Length: 375
Image (tube, rainbow, N blue to C red):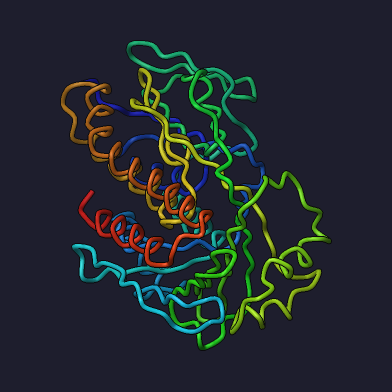
């Protein structure tokens, strides 16, 4: 194949930055663009699985994550009152140096990756996106929103669930759909009793506490019901307090502490799975642009990083064509990502149906065991 020398990556989030770093290792001149002029990231904490931590090791950030965030093993299951029920093990990966799970503040993860991108001197342009794409035999012509036309050997869409790149190359692709749940997240001080991921099951909603550092944790609550399009900030604390009514232990303490200054985020959960292939010509989608998922398996960020690793590997290994590299990428990624999306949605269905804790955690265990397999 003609050696790939240039790549445009649309989207400067976890998947986009990971792809930029991995392609840069192969000597590919990478241009990363993001629509946000301030390159900010929104969100609270995220849970990370062992396979995700393995992917972090592959891109070179695991030790920094271990030093600044939380890593550990196992999920403590409690009932709504807070009484321990069982511990769901987190299956080990094939790397004994990788913990079973962890948690990190999304802005911290963004900053770790952004500093690596800056250190690698990867070209980054902010406040712009893509307006047009034209696949040719030897290149992709990209018109950026600042009016500049440039040719690249490949274009990677890493621009999230509402991907502009996806709309350009697959105008008839499925649209994100509301799954029937909204996720409430709160950042709070971490008490000594929360020494690992902790799920409260058996109440009206699934609630969890996840450590993200030595001093902080985040709480998530999955509310079943009609979609909330918008809730004013001044109403968030009262609404969350109402949802937490009836829960004991640490959740009762959190409920008492809620006020107008509490760091609360509420987002409707949306997902879909894009049929294969995720590429057209020399343009390919990764991460949430191709397979946005709900948080039940805590694997959205991990799948995006794995996509970046595998794509860079297949581009480096291909001796035939861009199409060959993208085809081999799909063979390695399609079923794995499909499992994450479909099983996450199924776990959400079981939560909404009020099925037993055993049925909910069974699919979590089965899925995580599959995901520990090498990528």
